[in-house]
Image (cartoon, helix red, strand yellow):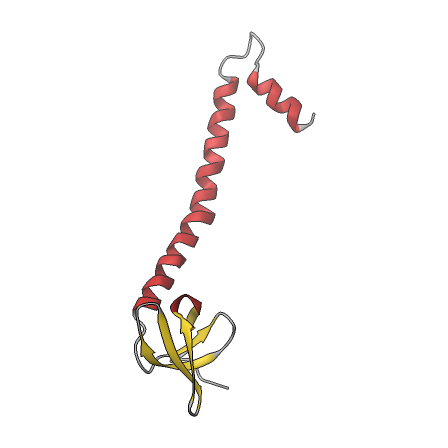
Length: 108
């Protein structure tokens, strides 16, 4: 029995089967609820934490960008950061490109 015949059997149950389509509908709803709890909800939580981290950046924080550039925040503006990546080498990056803080981690 392939998936298409299964759907047809559920959509048009025989006269003796009452509620067959309701159980199928309940199963589909349960699958979406489980997917929401295990996939969508954790991703939304992670995104909120990332936005909170980017809004709390201040001068002196050590950060890593999406491109893998390590640096120290020199200046914070609304949408951009000026980071120092070496002695007297500064670049301006978008706040959205900052992914993590490595202030507490030891550098190697």
